[in-house]
Amino acid sequence: MNQKLKEKTLESLSAVLPITAIVLILSIFLVPMEIGTVAMFLVGALMLIIGMGFFQLGAEMAMMPLGEGMGVQISKSKRILSIVLVVFAVGTIITIAEPDLQVLAGQVPSIPSNVLIWTVAVGVGVCLVLAVLRILFKVSLSTMLMILYGIVFLISFFTPSNFLSVAFDSGGVTTGPITVPFIMAMGVGLALVRSDKNASDDSFGLVALSSIGPILAVMLLGIFYNPQGSSYVPAEIATVVTTQDIVREFMRALPVYAKEVLFSILPIVAVFLIFQITTRRYQRKQCIRMTVGFVYTYIGLVLFLTGVGVGFAPVGSLLGSELASSRFKWLLIPVGMLIGYYIVKAEPAIQVLNHQVESVTNGSISASAMNRCLSIGVAISVGLAMLRAITGISIYWILIPGYVIAIVLSRIVPKIFVGIAFDSGGVASGPMTSTFLLPLCIGVCEALGGNIMTDAFGVVALVAMTPLIAIQIMGVAYKLKSKKSDKIDGLSADGIDEILDLEEEYQHE
Image (tube, one colour):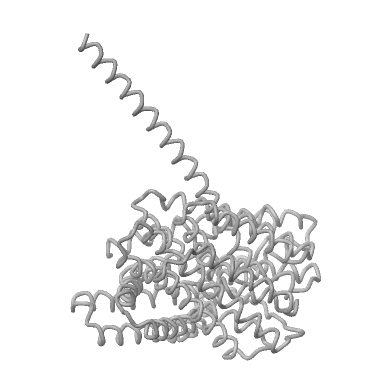
């Protein structure tokens, strides 16, 4: 077995094991499940582990070098119009390729799937152009975020309430396992050409701005279509009796996901081929390595999405409905927080982000610190989502104060933490959120007779919001620690100077 693949698979094992253990414990003490359902869940967990291992290695070998190479090439170009057109086209293509977007589009029947997908893709393309131009012209990320989120909340007051949560969710799902490694590496590539002191700070923020585009685009689409009576079709639990039944269920879903992921990967491969033909950037060995990387990415995503879709999603819906129907429904909040704390580590793009942060900051912001902050942030967001599902409070009461706090913090913390924080929001809300946490909230809403479109949808938006605050609080702590360290260093230096002066006086006497 490839040593690197073994390392990535072990990382995946440590990420998926805690959430698997939590679900099994819940099935013993609070929500009894049939043996067949548990077996399906365990097979799904195994596929998640192997899939994440392949995906992470594939992203490292193919997606990241391609994104970084394109970022460097764009930075060298002097023609702004060419940059705008290329970045818009690439942003649109990779968004159409995002599997999470296909899942969301299938859940909003009042609008044709293709219309929704193209609307979101154009939104990402436009905001990715703004993000690239921001780096090239050295515009403050905090200022851009303030302006764009101001526009988002202004338009949100005119968006139909049944569509508001879906619009905010779209910002999270579009920055998933396909787009994140590519866009983040592009940011690094753009910053590499610059030699100023803020270059590494500006390498982050592309994912953050790209995730605003879909929110705006889907809100405008919602106003235009005025979708009333939108509904959601929850995942059904397959009836399985024998091990053969379990294998049959996964084998039935595997070709569907294989086809879906193939159509997701092909546009990226086309971008790679066109880029290589026009620039001749990569040597033969590197081209072969990147081709193998694309194959690993494909295998990883197929296994991951099949495991999540067949094994995890139905269990999420079952847990939510059973707990909400019982006399322990308020336990949903702490249970949800516990699930949120561990589930974010199983997101395939999270480890990509954390290793990228550690690499760019030369270890001053460690992957373990990022993991801890993201886990705390997502735990809080899932707790709030459970509270919404139980009580039906408006998402506005959480999103508006949350984003105000995040924007205020962005004016205080070191610049690099702003980009990392807002990027992490998009990365945290990946396929595990849309296919496990969303069904969990759906199950709660259905059991309590709530409005699914207003009370259950929105969990992705909340998962995308809380890391913005958690990571920036880490930035505040980092800033205070640095100041304290500088003060101690200053005092130490003064003390040494004093000793040297006394010694000089003594020798003089």
